[in-house]
Image (tube, rainbow, N blue to C red; front, top):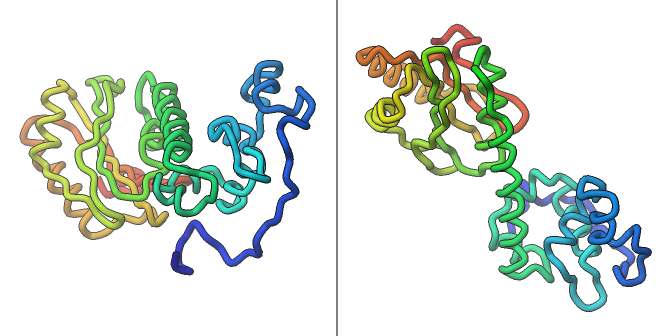
Length: 243
């Protein structure tokens, strides 16, 4: 792994004292604690320990979970971005089955966030960003989505148009138009992510926005905005006077 790996750092190795789950009181055992106090009472390490189920010789599931989090700077978002086989290579004691379980749990949480982030109507760029963010915030490659809206700006659904690499994705305006027409949407909001974290649009972003907007105008479809999504910020073409 190169020194440029964003998920690694030059911090000194963290050494943990090993904790056997069997030696903990029932109040401190993750499963018993979840049953007695609710799943929200568990720490990130305890949640991960439940997912991986068991550790390895001399190391409990909680020890392994703590080491995983420490490697990710105690940032669950970094773990969410990690490919399955990268977990296997990176963490001794995490095989493909455990890595898949962790990834599946994170994905399920993201989908749950999508289902609870629906809005009655989009009235601002912040509304659009908050709706689309759970779909895109942990991606390590670019994706292009559209939010499909009714005439009164109520959200019908969001659809992924294309997936690409770390720096770009190809978008065919004809596909955007077809999805919009198929869903009988009156207006759309364009959305794509920048895995780099830089929320500023490129010249290619500007050209694509103009091209799609022109194509939609021919069919009396409004393009209300183009949102560039980053994990903790966004860029709105409309807010910046570029629509």
